[in-house]
Length: 283
Image (cartoon, rainbow, N blue to C red; front, side, top):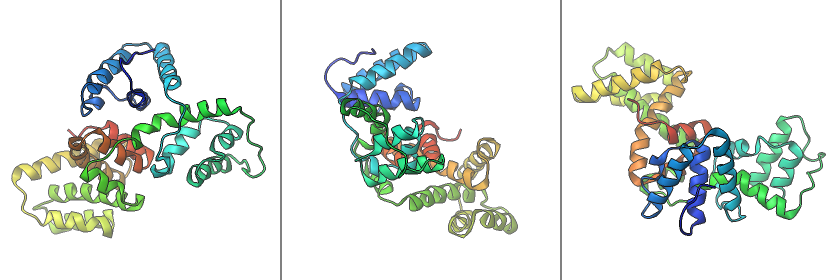
C-alpha cells in the first residue's frame, strides 16, 4: 500500500479520488500543511508504480478507508453516479442503491432500464451487509473528493445554481471570450457568431464584441478561440464555447482552492467536470 503517515481518512479519500481522476501532485497544492506534503509524496509514489502495482495500491487505499458513503452524493450531477455504478451488473446495481436516497436509487434504476432490465421485476443481488458496505464505499468513495470540501465564494455561488443555470454560466463566460475576439470585426461576422450561439449565449458575444478591449486582450481572446477551434475533441460550436468558459473559470476556482474546483466539477455533467478538473487554461 502507498503509505500516508499520520491519521486522516480524509487524506486517503483525497488520494484515492485523485488517483481515480488521473490527477498529479498539483491537485494537492491548495491543501494545508502537513496534508499537502503527505499527499504530494503519496501521489508521487503512485505515479512511480507500474499499472498492476498502481491498481493494487488504489484497491488497498479503498479498503483502508472507513466503510462509509460520502455525504452529499445527491448534490452531484447524476452522470457522476451513473459512471460510478455503470460497471456493475444490473442486479448488483439494484442491491447497492437499495435503501439509499431517492436520487441515487433513481440513477441505479435508470441504468437498469437503459439496459433493458426492469428494475421492478429484477431481483437485487443477495449481498451480505458487510460486503455491501464495502462495495458502496469502493463505488462511491472516489466521489468524496467532489463533495467533501468547503468551496470558496465563487465556487459556492456556482454550486448553488441549478445544472441548467450552471451550464449557462459556463457558456456565457466562454461567449465573452468569443465576443472579445470579435471586437472590431465587421457587423456581419459578429451577427453570425451570435446566431450560431443562440439568443441566451449570443447576447454575451454581442456585448463583449461592442467593448473596447486592449489590443493585447483582443489578441489573447483570438488566440484562445483559435486553439479551441483546432481542438478536434470539441465537436460543435456549443461545446467549444463551454470549453472556453471552463478555461476562464478554472484559474479563478483554483485560486480559491481545490475544494472550489472539485465542488463545481461535481455539479457539471461528468465530461465537463473532468475537463474542468484536468484541463489547464487554453494555451
